[in-house]
Length: 271
Image (cartoon, rainbow, N blue to C red; front, side, top):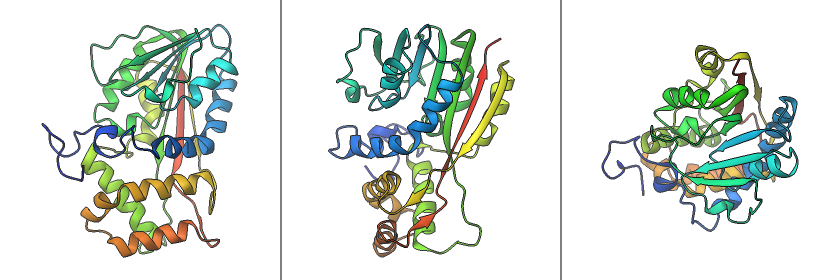
């Protein structure tokens, strides 16, 4: 489906997997795992520092292909992990008895998965228009002493580059994501404030920008993302096929070096 309004709603009311990145696409798992290779070491390092361990009951929101879920089970030794996603087909290889797979929509207000010592959501909330209400709901699912860890993307654009093919395609991508499925990263830097507003303590945050070099997993992720979004990118009017091809060639070139989108990770603890 292109940038037209999703069935039954206005532009921006669509779902990630239904409008742009279908879970059944032959390259979707590879695309997701390429991003995981870039971000998982930072995510798991932070979760380890926060004390996820053998007695922890964990909720992994937007579990995807299960890379963080697997770490929680195999490395952290969590007592139980609930892996929640609208499409859980990527978790079929995980058979640990401590794992409960929950196929559900996080935006459904009646959802009650239980209470947890850790709730982690990465690159999920930025795609959901109801993100502020969902943060409140997630905070309400914490046990006393439990931690909520939120991670989403922020753009760290070069202010001197407004016209390169790379910049034009990246800007077109964010516009297309917003118009088709409602993606909005503008409030991501406010996540620490949101956590404080929910009564959490020990709130902190960090920004991580993984290296963007040719041949890296992250370059593969962006290349596959842009190729899959070609119609939506062109519909923004910011780029045409020639500009997209130029940006893709730059991604694969030895000259490629950019400060790409970063990941803000914010966390807090229920008193």
